[in-house]
Image 1: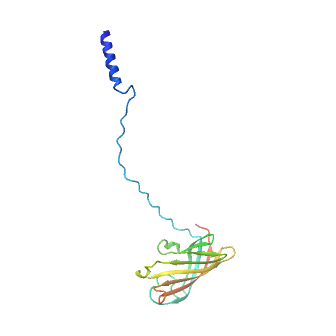
Image 2 (image 1 turned 30 degrees about the vertical axis):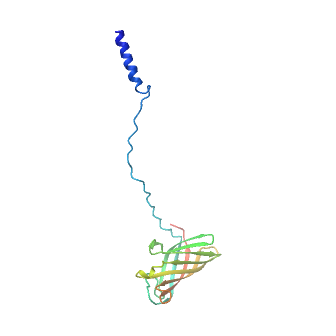
Length: 179
């Protein structure tokens, strides 16, 4: 019986020695291929209305191109138009007609000096390709001393600068608490 035990012990020692000295090797898991992660573009949220304004059309010059949209007939008025206005140092952005964002709003950018501001919006060099041929617009105006009201003149253009249509609107707007 002693010989059987010693042979069993020799076999076990030999077997365990082939195992790497008592530490058990675990095979590495097979990598699972994954598709590359593509970040999902987060849509820009619609700007929040912080001003509301009323406009009256004060001048119209008919020519080639346009006009399209509201406020293109002499004497026409529109009330409660939503704006988002941001002032950063001497820069100003005035985004008009927020419910029509992001396609038919007017996102002006410009400068502010004291209470006076000027802004422009240009549709792009290919504006004559489109049905309305809207070229762009300018706005110039003044805030009151506490920046709670502004009055401005806006000029919109369709068609070529030489023979196109232009419309002028007079604005009075008030700061509102964002909703």
